[in-house]
Image (cartoon, rainbow, N blue to C red; front, top):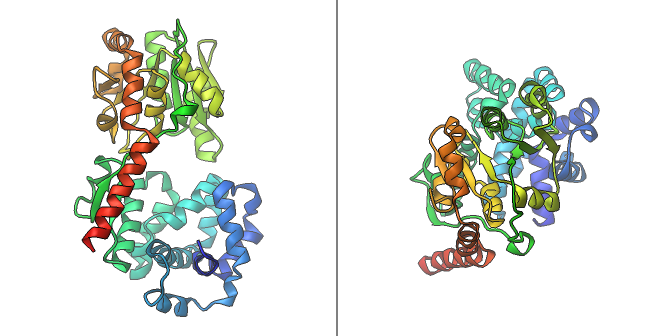
Length: 367
């Protein structure tokens, strides 16, 4: 991103009053991490008070600013305006839910509520803010894409799975380019005698650590849970649904690094992937497959596009089917070499890069 783009985005995503309030009342050092922290610091460095927002908006369509930045600018101004109108409730929400709520508040679909300025719409948006866990990821992204297309009608989109397109099949999709793995850091070396099941992900209901735990309890098989658990909502979920059931057989190993993750996968009998949301891809599934570890997954999101049932993994309609001995036996019977080869053939960086290059070349040729 250029310096001009950074300053424009910084100016619009949080206008001066909001920057000052966030800095003074929310102690961003306590909850802004990683890229979120970097964005916030860029906002401060951009000195939003140097800009007039109405002028910025007027200039967007006449500039060469990348369309995605322009769309985020529009969303950012409107979200910031809304947050200021509901500041006490917003502060309480951030203090209760952590940095995740700050990100969601700006990213979620508040545009319509702010534009129409009606009490009913504002009440609805405020409810969305308080219950931000219930606001669908897909809805948020669809809203952003709609704004991009509105600002730049010639925009074209690339999906990472065909399932990702289902909510908006009429969007200008030009290609499907699934994700990839650097296989040099995923050695194919299955450890003999693996008896434990493994869950990888984050602590949230949609990822389903509690469902994996239920399967382990029912089958009396050991389970190792490796999951991100830092945000307040994640900690609350862990304390309520996971911690009470931990014992010598069911172990929470924390948020592991890459090397430890690969070791866990190589030694596992199977990866349990009991998701309950329309996940657009599911990188953890191909990470397990790269290690030759069978995946037992629910039929949600892009799972059927990643796993070939009965050859490279097992797909079930309901997670309780994971408890059946026949399901586990079928997973045990899969050939690790075949599973690994599937990843090499379909999810290599070379394939992904070739797909993107082909999409770009086709787009250029058509213009």
